[in-house]
Image 1 (cartoon, rainbow, N blue to C red):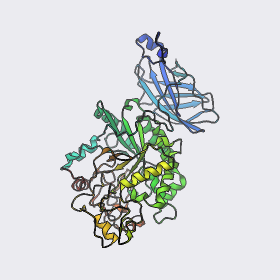
Image 2 (cartoon, one colour; image 1 turned 30 degrees about the horizontal axis):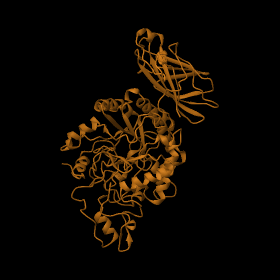
Image 3 (cartoon, rainbow, N blue to C red; image 1 turned 60 degrees about the vertical axis):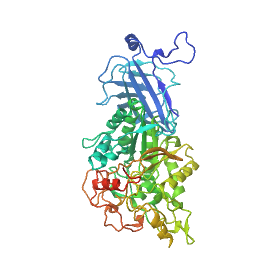
Image 4 (cartoon, rainbow, N blue to C red; image 1 turned 120 degrees about the horizontal axis):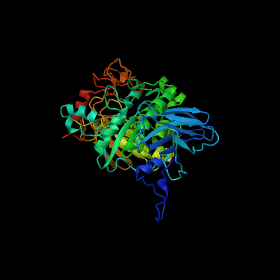
Length: 572
């Protein structure tokens, strides 16, 4: 529940002769402005009993400033810690927040926002007085101010952010796609913006940073609604079972993840300039699913995943991201839920839902911070297998016993996403959650696409002859040969599904085919080597990867051309 105190204009008084509730009226003259020098909105966004996150917005109603200093005092023992968009110091109960080098300018009528974390015991009373450069800002009881609560609360969010909205077309991806032969057929499609390292927030190698993308989204928005899709992807010890997407932060660097990655992103997204955008954040691809399937006594376990399960930093990091971003009213968090070929087995399905609930109620987060879940991100699982179902049998042998299905309960992403949504609601997530399915590379069209069911000589012949997904094994994930573009992005395509999305930009590599030295924290994974004969996680099968691939996230022209050639529905 959000609490707030606002230093408000004297004009909050009732207009004389008008009945009804008080309304805020802007000052009509410079005299009024100078009489009310500043307003301060102090919000406690998350409070978990021993700590809290606060956001502060200061509005200057006097002469323009080139620097600023905001001060207040606590009545209790609150102690501030990490902070963002400000230089913050504390002496006893007195706190001083000074501008950073980049946000010192504060025009007349202009506002600046900053935030911080704090700890306390006893009570966490909101400060009653603030000064801006030594001048007291007016204060009332703030009972009606503040907007959406932190640690949950849906604020002004709509049920499905994609409904009735355009979706942001990343101009950097669009230019690369358009430069490819035939690429103009899809270069106007919306794709995800991946924030996969701290440097990506401000932009790398002269590229666009987060603010650049948000500003471009505002320009694309016009008078309608606009969704911006972000991938939040930099957990400590990231992707513990796939070296190609290892990250920059070590397994224990959870504090750096919070202060240097999530906090700056939250500060930018909470800027009122972007309040009209619907910002979809997909949270930490592959992280929690790895804790379900690649730990403990399983044959698929890795030492790195065991470490991340033991130290709890995946759960903590996801919870912190959900809480911080969920406190922003126009942000919609979707938590990654793997895919059917990962979590669709009986011993993974329910444990995954319970683990997601644990993460979504940690570090100050609640289930209200979760708008929904996304499946198949950056993966290849077919959306809908039409030539067989999980209930089919051949000569008395169930499809579940086929080598391809291997006792899974699901044969495609749509059936898995809809069933998993029901499971998530059953463990305590809100009944209104929606699912996203990444269809950027799961079309499996072209000449290899089966026209009908396979032969009934055996259950394997039946499934293998009819399945659209032409991977060698469902665990194969890197730059898969034969893949094609899937369904184009669209809102509300099926029951319980908020949208089909292209969260993984087509043409961006999953990982390099051989080791490539780099400063991006990305290792070499043998699953990206087309000559690799596999491991326990893919049933010791060939990797099925394309040759000559660059580092993950880098442009891979040969893959892009293959995706277009094998698109289903086909490109015109």
